[in-house]
Image (cartoon, rainbow, N blue to C red; front, side):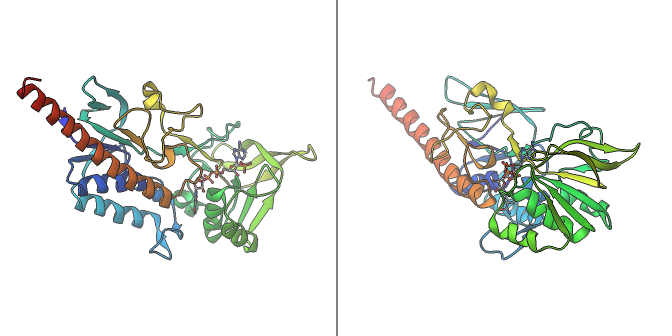
Length: 321
Ligand code: NAP
């Protein structure tokens, strides 16, 4: 069992920032992740809304953030977190698949995972034409036609990426307008390779023995059902929070997003939550980084306050009070 001042769970932009802030305050910081650092930035092609860079590749930005954290003294630890428990002494134990780490302060930055469509054929053809990552899999669809499902920032920005690689991108959206930022919408509507199918639900993904060949769709307005040919389906229908392993702490809302105040404090003293896993409106790299700075500083103040409390108790005992 290894002891730290602060354990940051998750090495995306929020976690890396929080860890850097806490380490720069001279705390002993572990930053845990079950995979490679960078989080969703690793699946993002161009990042154009992170100040300081007109455009930067997601993985490159992740690498720079990691270097900032490590330079500040953060220790990166591999581990898949199973549970966090709180002791009577306010110490938190973070149990991973291979180890136990202990610290007075824990910052949860575990992000979110792609939501599945939940239709027949989705699981069967996953990796055989169904994908959740254009940057990872787009190259397999060179000179082919693909379908993007969804209408948010991810669907449109990844659709634009796919338009550079493939012959045609058909965006199927269940409403008659997109949720994505206006700048992305304008770019997509101007792109000759992008088509839009409105008010339409994907009800199944179909294929042959080896690969996707089409999607079954239902038009919500006309009630018409049909099969549309496609070589690949990229699903971007939102996210679900990676918070299942914190269930015992009872710090989430009904949907599983962790509830905090503006100081990133959960209802448990010394446990903070930041970034996409937190209940909030705008989930971006910039907002995750902002959350991280606040939590890193507040974790420092929390650890300091415990030290002062311990000193005060010690001096009371020494003075016989
Ligand atoms: P999102 O904003 O939640 O959008 C999900 C989209 O999928 C919505 O259009 C939604 O429809 C649709 N949808 C949900 N369930 C569906 C279903 N069962 N069938 C069909 N469509 C369904 O998710 P996101 O686009 O992944 O973005 C997540 C967060 O990351 C957002 O806060 C976003 O701003 C951020 N992000 C930012 C950037 C950037 O700044 N460049 C890039 C990517 C992501 P409705 O519109 O009807 O709800």
